Structures are given as C-alpha cells and as structure tokens.
Length: 143
Image 1 (cartoon, rainbow, N blue to C red):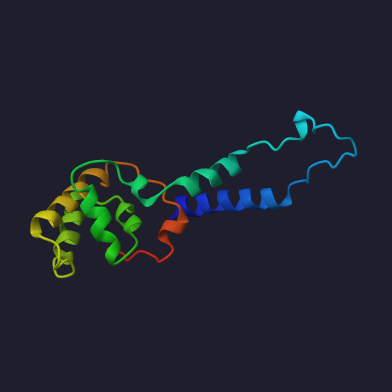
Image 2 (cartoon, rainbow, N blue to C red):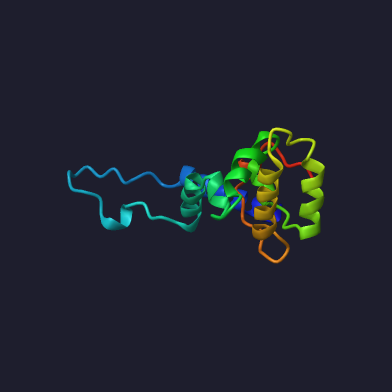
C-alpha cells in the first residue's frame, strides 16, 4: 500500500508541476524560442508518462498460467490484486481452495495452472511489484 501511495504522490506532484509551470515566453520577434525555454522532462513527468503507458498485463511476467490469471481473476476483483501481497505457497493453496466454489466455469486444470503461476511469480521470496493506484481503484479483497 505504501508503494502505491508513493507512486500516486509522484504522479500528483508531476500533475501539479505541469499545471503550475511557467508559460512559454511570448517574445514579439518571429524567431524561435531559445533552447533553454523548451520544456524539459522531469522525473515526475517521466513517471506520469510511464504510468499512462503501463497496462495490467505488464504486471504479469510471461509464463504458463499467465493467460488464465488475466482472463479469470478480473471477473470478481481487479486482476492487479492478484499481484499484491507476496504470499507463501501455503497462502496461495488456501486461496486456491477458497476460490473453487467461485470459479465454477474454470476447469480444475486451468485453476491449478493459474495458481501455480501466481505461486511462482508472486511469492514471499520476490519483491512486490509497484502497482499504479488506478489499477486498484475498485479495491482488493483481503485473502
């Protein structure tokens, strides 16, 4: 949650900086503005641009089960919630078991593949990915 808040603060800061920036010099001559007057990219504006280009799919590394996660997990909650809270293998197993009654349209094979993918890529031995706040706007159910 702290990382999401920090990213949101960076994005908000960039928006404020962009909105409060000085307007371009309106010189009377017909020459072009000097190079120093050209807008410069800042870390905040770069973070905004990166967040706008990031898609949900970018949070999930390639691998067997990825498509099942992207196609299935978002039917009940934001799919990005699956990438939060680096869980142990035992926690993923409990979540898998608790979702069996919720995933009735998913075969056991597909469900097992998606949880194997989540266990391999979003576990307690890996750093939690930085997820833009807009990907979690609907909130995440604690598991």
